[in-house]
Image (cartoon, rainbow, N blue to C red):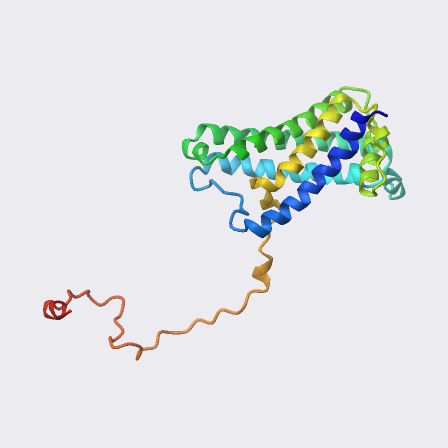
Length: 252
């Protein structure tokens, strides 16, 4: 175990996680009005109507698969009747489908952002950086799945990457578990942590937005207009509009 391995599999994950947490707290404290997805739906809707649902549905499936595969020990799955063969089949088939759906949606969104003039003009430098790391993370993960899980003999990441992730969460890091992990999986992990570090400073903060305050909003009391308010009588909406009195305007 050398210094580089400790930096890659201990220092970088903890640093990225710290930036992720502190960055969101700072952004919420000092940039509440900038906490938004900066939607470009008003500029173009046809491509967005296809790309956005595909990407968001696919990424939700990807996240669910990572939670099951990385955070839940396989012994727990064995206890509920999910064998290694069942898990591998489900992870490979559903994971591949989720990856294809996510990448297709992301491709449509990037094509839209590049080819639609108003959308491209609304794209910031941080948006471009975010798309690079998001695409790299998804690309390396998909490529690793296809190479090792679909067409290869299979890589048992639940014996290496999964316990390494849980060791980080338990503040007892075991970087040696990542030494013999294939390069594509290592690149997938590193680009993911780089994306986490960038997350608070991009439009991705909208992931943690929800109209919670709407549930506790005060009552809104609607009242009719007071007919006696002011010196001027209330005019019905269908009454004809009359020109102002010239003599009265002259006195003003």
